[in-house]
Amino acid sequence: MSTEIIDRGRGPEIKGTRITVYSIWDYAREGHHHTYIAVMLGLSSNQVCAALQYIEEHKEEVLADYQKILDRVARGHPPELQAKIDAMHAKYEKLWADRRKMALENGDACDHGG
Image 1 (cartoon, one colour):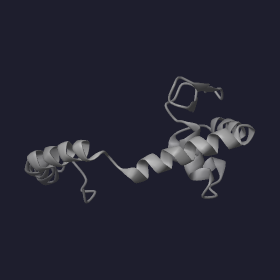
Image 2: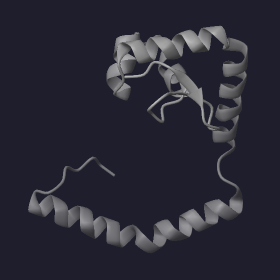
Image 3: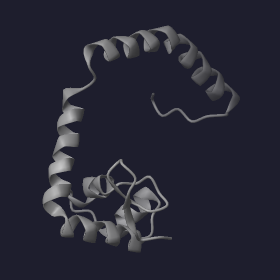
């Protein structure tokens, strides 16, 4: 498994994965050990350590970009997009509920409360 950090235009990520250093930072900033992060994200400890080293070496830039991501998430979707999402959800809500119910009755799925 590669420990190289590359940037394909989505931000720095672990080569061969779609996991960015921002995903690693989500866990690291809460104090999680690199082995825990590795298990949670399906990575090797070496890959996580490489990402943590990258974060440390580029901390100012990474944290500034990370804050921009948090700010964008906090703003939510633009109203016109949220209206489309709400309409789609309303349109398919019964279908999704029926499929969940059928899967549970057939023993084909687990109910995760969703």
